[in-house]
Length: 261
Image 1 (spheres, helix red, strand yellow):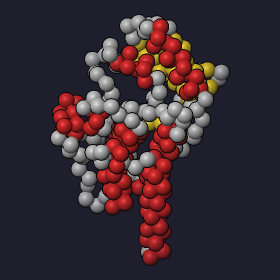
Image 2: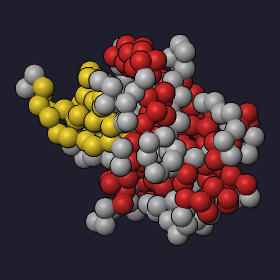
Image 3: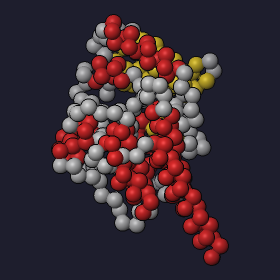
Image 4: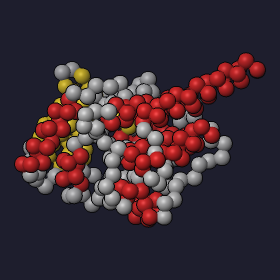
C-alpha cells in the first residue's frame, strides 16, 4: 500500500495522519500539492472529512484530518454482526450524496475520482463523511510508483476503466456502486479480480445484479447512476432529492405498519 494511516494527537485532539510515500516528488508536483492544500483547508461541510493540515517533503507527505471512531463505511457494512436498518442505511447514502454535492459545487469543482466505501468515514452517530478526495496530481505521482495501478476498479465508471476522459459524472457512477453496497451489504464483484472487472464493466458494459425485493425507488436511482452515457446520469443535487423521497417513503411505510399492528 502506498499510504499508511496513524492515530495521532494534535492540540489535544484525536486526529488521523495519512502518510503517502513516493520515490521523490518533482518541484512541480509539490507546487500543485500546495495549491490543493490551500483549497482543502477552506472546505467546511458536515459530510466532508475535516482537513486540518499537511506536511510535505520530496520523499513523503502527510495529511492530517479529524479522526472518526467507527472507521470506514466498508468496515461498518461488512462487519459480520451488522443488522440492516433500512432507514439508517438510506440516511448514510444521503450523507454521501450531500458531501459529494458540496465538492462538485466548489469553484472549480472537486472531482473525487476514487469514491468507494473505504474512502467514506463514519462518526459515532452514524453520520458519513467523504474522505480521501483532492490531491489527485500528487496521488497520480504516488500511484505510478505502486503495483496496484490506479484506484479501485470495482467502484469505477466504465469510461474511467477504459482510460477515457472523465468528469464529475464518473463519481455519480461510483455512488451507484456505493448505494448498491449499502443496500445489499455485499462487496461489489467480490468473485472477480481487478482485470476481470475492467473487462466486464469497462468493455462488456455489464452491471452488478440488483436483488429482488430491493425498494423500486432505490433500484431506479442505482440504475440511473449506472447509465453508460455519463451525461444521462443524474447530478448529486438530483440524487439528494430522490434519496430524501426514498427515506420519507420508507418512514411512511413503517409508520403505517406500526399503526396497522
